[in-house]
Amino acid sequence: MSGQAAPGTSLSPALRSLRLTGMLETLETRLAEARSGRLGHAEFLQVLLEDEMARREASSVQRRLKTAHFPTEATLEAFDFSYNAKLPQAQIRDLARLEFIEAGEGLICYGPVGVGKSHVACALGHLACRRGHDVLFTTTSRLLAELAGGHADRSFEVRLKKLSKVELLIVDDFAMRELTAAQADDFYELVSERIGRPGRSLVLTSNRAPSDWYQLFPNAVVGESTLDRLINTSHHLLMEGRSYRPNRRPKLGSGR
Image 1 (cartoon, rainbow, N blue to C red):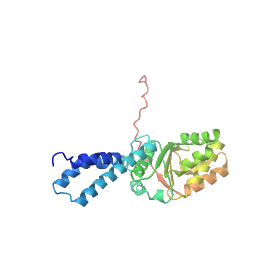
Image 2 (cartoon, one colour):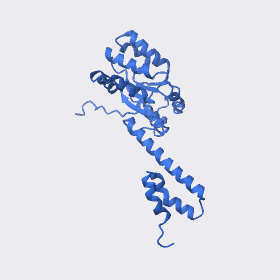
Image 3 (cartoon, rainbow, N blue to C red):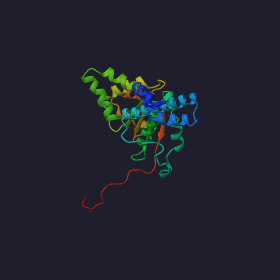
Image 4 (cartoon, rainbow, N blue to C red):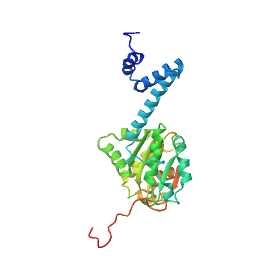
């Protein structure tokens, strides 16, 4: 009928007002499919709803990836397992099922420099984001500084609670140096809040084997209380072999 607005034109303001942008983006395509007879009335509504759900899920994934603060866009799909035959590929694939998060189990990824520990940890975190988990990546130094700042402004409990609620907390470069008494106490509090709680997992990457961590705690009792719980409730992923990092050290006599 002349003078009557096309269905897409009349629906667009309502969809925009309701912030149904997923439907709005595909509306004309779906209307064309309906007019051609490829979609019935119920199918037309169903696919529009699916378009909206897909857009919202994609937005949620992007939000989780942004708040995770990954240093790189590392994924398991992009990891070259063929470069290093010593890597425990089957164990990594098994961990990629992410059942350890639901079980409240930790993951300790350790081995020499450059074998891909941080990449695998971030890749598992990236996968967790895509599957609906909230993730936070941080380094040990930043984590300890964050907790220490809570003592300075009396927000320690608030900061601890925030870190404790993250479903997957990835802490890179653990056990690089000795801890102070205050740092050891703070880390103990964090471990106590997270370990063994379903839907809460702590991933640590380290150049040292877990058996070497005890000596880094100034108080043996605190060290044993922290690490015995952490080590015994975590999967251990030993990564060895060739380094992925190119040797950038200058040759002698090169003048560099």
